[in-house]
Every structure is written in structure tokens, then in C-alpha cells.
Length: 348
Ligand SMILES: C[S@@+](CC[C@H](N)C(=O)[O-])C[C@H]1O[C@@H](n2cnc3c(N)ncnc32)[C@H](O)[C@@H]1O
Image 1 (tube, rainbow, N blue to C red):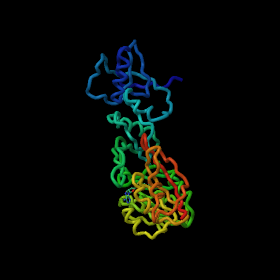
Image 2: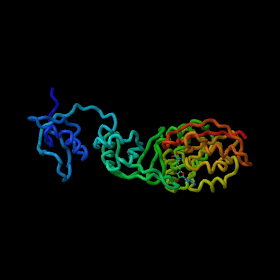
Image 3: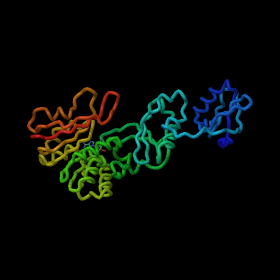
Image 4: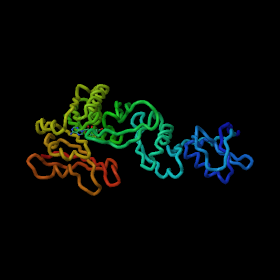
């Protein structure tokens, strides 16, 4: 059976102008890639969707309505298959993106800046359930808030994200959140024992605490963050996860909070401020019990030692003694740096 034919607007050119015409339509995002171009009386008919704009094509051609046969449908393997960008830009198409709830977050290389809405449209069509696509201009300031520009779709940057079976209300405009830490949130929860008292420093909206509390019924956690927006979301999420009675969210500077704590007050401490946590290493170490564990996250140039470990192994009255349980790459951060995760156990 022949596939159903469709009437569609066409750009008609002589075959010698075919490649130029195809590129011209692609550059404007109006070549209909679902239909097979046709040849009628030695002229090439290219299927067109949408408005190519006021500019006239710089080659001999005419517009008319024509009949096209759809390409046999094959599921696109990546959003690249759906991205209507000119050929010369395809080398820059990003290979990865993050999905937070129904929001797709994408870093766009500078040469593709002018193509952002086309990448957004392709991702909206490719990622199941995507509502909007945001261009990630990186995190900034002490609160590590992500600077995002919406390039396709609609609605707010607030969404519900499910990770490790936990539903989290996330607001990408108000507080830091990265879906790339899901395995770390689960890993720390997996190492924790029931009944522990945990300190989640630089908590953001507290996914470390909440993953742990939702698995261990007698553990308790204090989350500390200086961003009031993050603390509000942490409390909202604790209430949804029904762990509020074992969870405390404190809006404070970590250094001031630590200074007010008794030594050895916690069984487990998480310190996730990757550029700066090392500055707090000695203060953090002081509040961990002997036998307790400390999880630090740090961005480290490849081949260099963790500054957090170095600070704790330097001689000093408050340093204690530490056993390195593990040190691993969580993910690459830049061409020369990795995000490392370190687990230390206090032995004395
Ligand atoms: C990398 S984010 C936290 C991520 C979070 N732990 C997670 O797993 O999603 C770092 C957080 O540290 C907070 N922060 C930065 N400086 C701080 C300080 N001096 N005291 C307390 N919180 C701080 C920021 O507001 C931000 O939410």
C-alpha cells in the first residue's frame, strides 16, 4: 500500500539549485523534514512548513502547492534528528542535557546561540513529557542559583522532580538543584545507619537529608543553607515526604552555624559546596563524632589533591584523625576539572 500523500507548500527549483535551496530552507527552520522532496518534470519540489520570512531566495525559484509522500516514520534517536539547524552548525549540537521534572536544561555552545529556539523546539518534541526548555547560563553567586533563559515551551521554572523514589518540589529560579547528584543522594543514604544524627551543610532544598530520612525511620537531620528560598523548599519537601518531625531546616551561614555547635555533635556530616567547602574543613571535622563519617564534595583540577583532605590531614589541635573511605569522580565539571566525592571516617 502506498503511503498517504499530502498537499503542502513547495519551493520549486531546478536540480542545480537543489542543495542551495535545501540549505536556505533549513537555515530558516522551514524545510519539512517529514516529507520526501519530489521531482516533477525535471524540477525539484522541496516541502515547506511555516513562514520563511520576507527575504527572497538568492536563486531562481517559485512557490507553489505540491503533493508529497511522507518519509517512512522512524523514531528519532536523538534531538539532533529533529533540530532544524543549518548544516554548518550541526558540529556544535550538545550531546547532553538535564531533565528536571518537566523542564529540560541545556548548555548551548556560543556558536549555537542564534539557534537556541530551534534546539528548544527539537527538545520539546524529543523529550517525553517536556513542558519547557531552558538555556543554562551557569550557576552564580554564593547561592549557586542557575541563570536560565527559557527558549521553548511555557510556564514557570517550578516543577516536581522524582529521584530515588522521592518527589521533590524544585524551583530552579529560587534554589540550586542538579539531577546529576541523584546517585550521591542515594549513596549517602545507603551508607547511613538508622538512629543517626546528620548535619546536611549547604543543603539546597535538602535532597541528601530527605532521601536519607525517607529510608531510615529513626534518623534525624539538620539542613543548613544561607538561601531562604532553598530552606522554604526544603521544609515544603519534608512535609510532603512526611519526615518533618525528624527534620530541621535552618537558614544560616554554615560557618556561624558550625561555630555554635558542640564538638562531636553529629554521626554524619555532608558538606556540598564544591568550590569552597575546603575552607570549612576543620570546622566541619570538629562536629563529627569518633566513628562518624563526613562526605565532602569538591571541584578539583585533574591530577591535584583534594584541598578538603589536605586541610584535615594537616597537624592541628582540632583536626582529629581521619581514614579515607573513598574518593571518586562524581562527574566531569570542565575540560580540566572533576567533581570529586570524598568519604572520610573519624578515627580519633
Ligand atoms: C551546590 S549547592 C547545594 C546542593 C545540595 N546539597 C544538593 O544536593 O542539591 C550549594 C548550596 O550552598 C549554599 N551556600 C553557599 N554558601 C553558603 C554558606 N556560607 N552557608 C550556608 N549555605 C551556603 C547555597 O545557597 C546553595 O544552596
